[in-house]
Length: 111
Length: 249
Image (cartoon, rainbow over all chains, first blue to last red; front, side, top):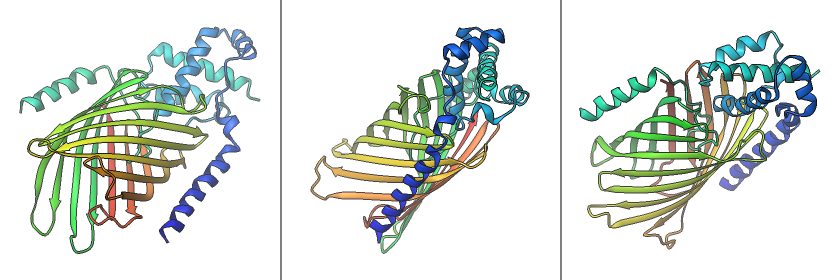
């Protein structure tokens, strides 16, 4: 009986992984490639800021919640969201700017 | 009293410049990400355990923990006090148990790396008790799903002259799914191998499994897990419920 319960538990985990793996790629924030850097340059965001923004996005935000896809919110929604979260994530103003800059550049390339 | 004053001074000193340390999605497992540099958080743990049958008893354990992010990859925690209330056929009452220091170092990230890893060490000392605990924490995030695994090795010395020794190896796995930005739900499984006097003659194996639920808002969170024993070990709890309430300072 207990073995049956354990098997059910293991099966549930496998199902969850299967279900979520469909979206794995889209949920991983895009890396800072040459293409993203070019898009950043058009928006006056330098490479260092993009890299710092991504590093902070993938490390600070997951301390409280899973990462949303950059396309999940509009370019006008992101600044308000980042402002709300910046205090909780202990981001300094330059770090907050870098995270927002990375998200907006990645967002512009996600369509 | 002096200890309390020192704690208050430390909290006030830090609270001018720090914020939230992070949310726990599990209560019997640790997660790989560490607190942000400079963040400070107070966590209060309450664990209720019930042993049924002829030797029925209840125990409620309390823990008050301060967690501080030294760097983005290294956090330090102090268990200010672990204490408990115990009620069985012989007696009932409160008692102080121990205090501890916990260190966690993050190696890799669970989103961008193939697997997120952290290492954990804890030194605990109390009334006729010394305990060392090391942990390997693994985690992978798949979109809204968090999968975590902990392997723990524990060495305990107890008794008047710390003459009683015990070892324990445990593994825990958990899954937590983010239903909404504020709510996550999942499941936790804990498998223990206990070695009294560092021997495996008694073949003590304990398995616990159950659901968890986590809610977060602004700078606080609360996470609850209920575990039922899936083995038949007499002196281990048949049911245990753990709640962790954390607040950023």
